[in-house]
Structure formats: C-alpha cells, structure tokens
Length: 187
Image 1 (cartoon, helix red, strand yellow):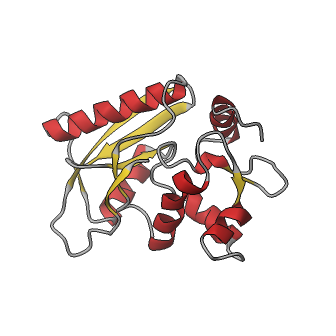
Image 2: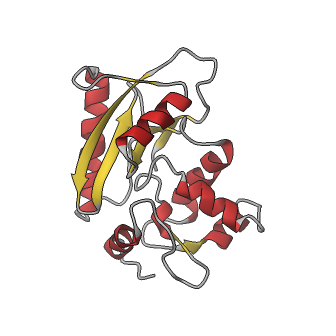
C-alpha cells in the first residue's frame, strides 16, 4: 500500500512546488505530479485541469525542465512502478502519496481502497459505502472515486456497478476493463 505523506490540504501552509510530467502507458497517457516528498497526482485529466487542481490545493507547479532532483527521482520511480504494474510484475505500489488534491470524503474513500478491495478483487460502490459506514452513500462514493487524484496507484478501477457492470472510470471503460483483466478479475 502506498504510504501517505500527507492527507491534509495545504491551505495556510507555505506553497510547495509540484513537478508534472506525462507518461505513455498501455491504458493511455497518464499525467503524473509530485512534490519533493510524494506523488500528488496520477490520472488521465488534461494537463490544464491538473494544473488547476494543483493551484486550487495551494501548490505551485514547477516549470518544465526545472524539476528538483527529488521530484525527478519520485516521478521516475512512479513511472517504473506503473510500468511494472501494467506489465503484470507488480501488485502493489510503494510510492509515498499526498492527497492534497482530494476532498476530505474523497481522501477517506480512496484510502480505503487498497485494504477493502485488494489486487484481483472487485467490490460495488454500495459495498464500499457500507465499509465506510455510509451505506446510503453509493453515489457519493462514485463521485469521490471520480475525483481520485491517484488513479491506478489508489485503485478505484476495482469498484464496479451493483449489476456488475464497469460503470465510469476517468481513463475510460476500456482502461478499466484492461486493468481488471490484468488483475484476473472479470467484471
């Protein structure tokens, strides 16, 4: 399970710099963003949207080509671990993560994923809502997962519709299907 470097927002704190890059994978282009200490974003959103999320969290994006050595090392490690996962040689991520780009409910929801739905398993939105002691919050869980700033690393793709369908995924249903098949799960 990724270690959580910070689960709070940075409001009122000194602005931290964030390096952003793009990583081509079999499931599409992933945007990655990291501070010197943790990965803050791994997802499919447009770079401008990622930059907006970074700014709204009180973080400052490092200009391209000016990444710190720590940021560069963390992004390289993230790329390597994602490649290993997609190649089927890694089942869990060991990256430090920072959920500064998530709301409090989204943080609670995505942090529950690894423990509640391990590699090779799926659960429904309603089941995850129940595990969070919010049995009537299946739609809220879906919304929180839709805003997951750490797709793939915090595995929201393992959550499926009650009828067993794939439902939504930030990278598209085909990417979700690919990841579930990779993990040996047919939804």
